[in-house]
Image 1 (cartoon, helix red, strand yellow):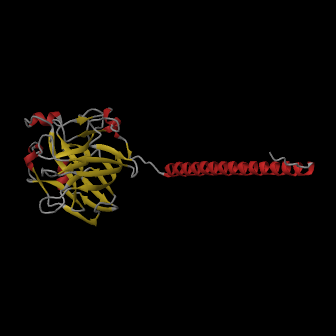
Image 2: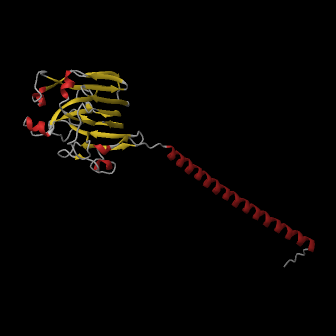
Image 3: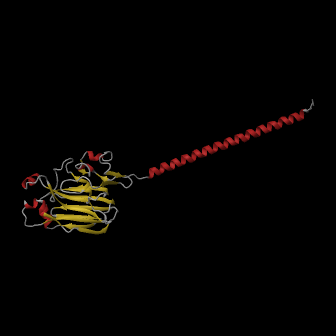
Length: 313
């Protein structure tokens, strides 16, 4: 056995060295822990900044609603016999499961979308529609207006989707109407089963243009009773506004006064103030607006979007 003698000064030096090494290790460990903590804090700050940026981005999205009061409109759908939804149920279209496939908001554009396809039809037509019908008294078709009483229909809209026929040409759809209606007394006078009268105005989207069709009296000498018959009226040649609207948004107005009807597209006007408009004053009328697809082709469909719609009387 070998005995090693260590002096006091040597022992003191060894102890000081061990103490220094221990302090250095602790310092390094503390530094590592501090660095790891700083990384965690940085990651949390980055995450918080990203979440804040995402929240700001979501807040910056401008959700819009169409400027349309549906209190005086009912809608006809291309399903059922067909199905019609009146006020007040139509006001809940956003949550109504029957209406949702055909009438819904595009909250990014701020439009009310009317979607339709060939399906169920109303009487006197072979075409289907998702179309609004004016009701001056909500829930009733009995209160209507005459040209003498007058009316204004204003809309801001766009045809955003529409199918093509077998020749590659776009189908047509009716976007606004003025439809005639017989009073009960007139209906009984001519022995008709319902109150239907011809539409004095149909406005089409046709190959990207706005086309207007009206009715003309076949015999200007017909009596006030004879002109109540649907067969007494024929179609005019139609009028195409020269402006190409395509799939873009446009404004459309219809102004009616006694013996006069005016259609306005983006500020450009077409006026009807002839003998046919004067004779038409015998009928009651109501406005219509929406998507009345003029085809029965299989697979056809269309979307018409209204941003604004307003009626005045």
